[in-house]
Image (cartoon, rainbow, N blue to C red):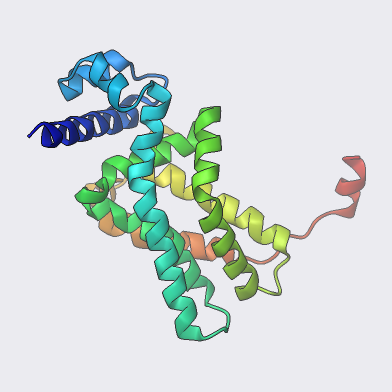
Length: 229
């Protein structure tokens, strides 16, 4: 029974921290808030995680471990099916971004709470979180980057890297839960198109990402390049 209670306490702390970090950000969440939400004392948090920084890392690790494994599984399966040939860009985009977005419908994987936490963290990361996520994502990022290079041989590699960067930014903002449509404009949208409509957000975002990846190459001005030196 003691072991069961220990596991339960650890998960309660992680769940509470995930919710609070999503709502208030890392810097805006206190250990007192976490202990209150989880109904534990500070000693329990220190026993299981040691520090607020370590707790934040474990909040991400328990979700990212599965996400990274699933992304790799999907990519491996697709590459086996094409037997050495290049994948379609749409397959690669779906494997990386679609796998993430589909997590929103699985509460056992964190659901929208984790997606919004991830989106918020990527748009306003602390230095240690940036370094942690870069380490956690490295192997997966490298595999998907190489798949994109192979799928788009006519596109300069630097351009693919930039476009992937823009795709990450668009996805992070979309899943952060910030209703920018109302924050930055007086345009009105129907409730059916709100940020909470995951069934519409996913196809809309995926279409946008793929369009950006396939956009015409930019034309750089030689004069601008000279003037910037």
